Amino acid sequence: MTDRQIRAVLCDLDGVLRIWGDLAEVDAAHGLPAGTVAGAAFRSERLLPAVTGLVTDEQWRAAVADDLAAVCGSAERGRAVAAAWGRQPSWVDPEVLALLAEARRSVPVLLVSNGTTRLEADLAALGLDTAVDAVLNTARLGAAKPDARVYLAAAARAQVPPAHCLFVDDSAGNVAAAEALGMRGHHHRGAAGLRRALADGGLLTIP
Image (cartoon, rainbow, N blue to C red):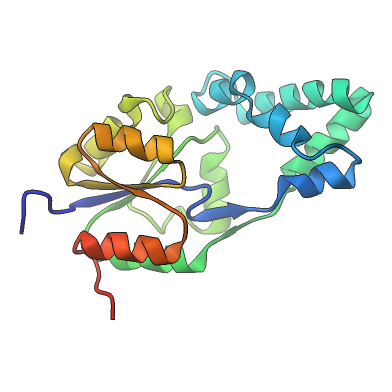
């Protein structure tokens, strides 16, 4: 055992464990340029209040519908596009889920998500609420990645010092922020890389 032994895995949700359908398909279905819905929903002025709990998920989506109305030409059409965005399919990556389950035999696994007030319901619907040891939803914390408070709160929830945490995220910037706090970071780009990162941390073996 070394001083850098991994004692907890802190894992992002979206883009790692939960995968979303292509938003460009929503744009195309409504005759909008690619990137229209994403631009309305995920620009900082809209997204940050939602993932820090300043507004509810419902309020965020209503505001996005209002923004889309200006682009779509009517409030009715804006609401229709926002509703289609709300029905966007998502699914769990089975390989990632299996890897986290294997790691969980040795150490606690926590989800650390820039989530909205809907996150807990989403996790329950996907069956992920019981697949991890704890969930840190930034909407409940009042700060979002890459704010250092998120990483420190997650480590505290795991009852593990930051230096003994492996942080996994599909955002290189979020990973860099974790590494700046002394965590071991893994920039997720697929299950194969995650398997190597977990193996390097002594949490599983590669045949």
